[in-house]
Image 1 (cartoon, rainbow, N blue to C red):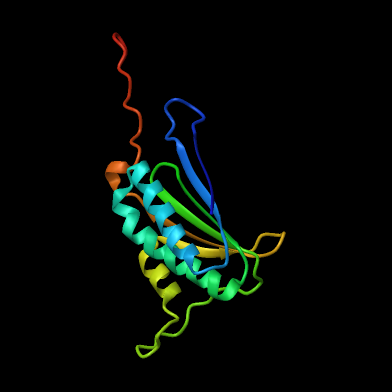
Image 2 (spheres, rainbow, N blue to C red):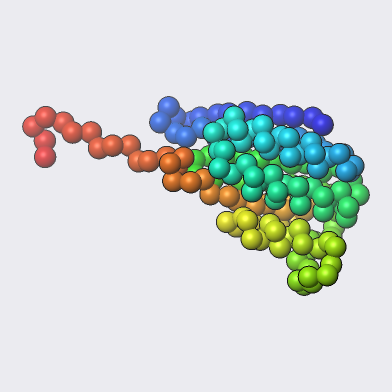
Length: 157
């Protein structure tokens, strides 16, 4: 597993964008590695309330990529203010689809879990090929940046 993470700000008042990404081989152990990365990074970012949901979503997406993609995949998570966005790229041509709900099935619930936990999610198809399955989780209000307070100047109304 290869890891890259960064933080950058354009202005001193801006909320820093935080990002972590890694390359995951098409192997079952990649699911564990992806979960560890998410736990570690979200904890460092102070997004403790999103760790469990994000870990579960990432587990489902990486499991799908390993089972159906058959090639290495790339995971990226980032946060800039009031949200955490996750993206999983794999070079496979097939598009993920939600299976019909079947209470007796032993699998096929991954995207249903993603759909129920994420505030938004979807699939993008880059022009270079492959696909990116992405999701967004909103941070609770205390983590969202508030507007800068108005500055009061003497003699002005």
